[in-house]
Image 1 (tube, rainbow, N blue to C red):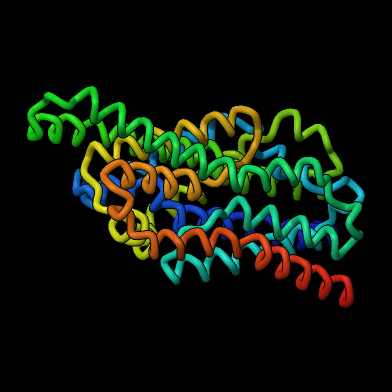
Image 2 (cartoon, rainbow, N blue to C red):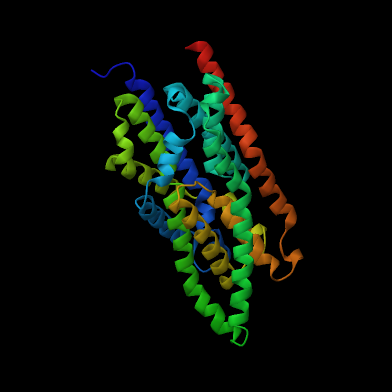
Length: 333
């Protein structure tokens, strides 16, 4: 018969699955908003493609999983209650944002929730502030790189194809955008797909006491994380897709290709060094950069401002939720 700690371990697994599912639902827009907005693929075909690419991406690394699972909080503050509180905070805010049609960073939801849950349980010394500052720095770096990358790549493509017949250019990038959308979905799986993996691995380490799991994360954890985030992607966050792919700026296939390629490249670079950046920040800012190549007014800055506001609110809201839930656990248990 399982011991008493099996129940909180099971809760962590279930919450991590829920987090991965909501992540996939909200972040579907990151992978397919542009390809749907340009009408290169139907929503159904785009979602199937994104779900498959997400699934593959999760299997390509574990560096981000280790940062999430053991890099933010010190070993003495890693408890079942802390992890559960952080997950609850992330799931609540991400569900609210998805319902409102706002693309938010699920990475930052989880990081803020975990960090402040650790503070509530064990004080400010519980957090590895060096690691946290690197993640927070990415809040500014990823959007800047995404916007600059989208803008510069779009300018380069316009110069390269300046003498091409518009109909031929449209046809070419209608095909190429399918590959760039798949690249974006793959990158999302490689980065965001590792977050539930890191949490489940952390729960398993707490339950078994075997820290050696970090050297080789069990395959069942990887598969479970991959299937969960892909299932969320398959459902699709339609309001978020409308916000990112249609409402922010008008996109053609060449614009979608530039935005997806720039954003996916930023995510791949960050994932390779274990820094969990926001795929939402990368693609949204890349779309802004691409739109700005026509003229600044081509971007609906009111919509963009709402998106940025949601980004900025993510840390304090999820941090407060994590702190409050952990504080309640501390009082009760």
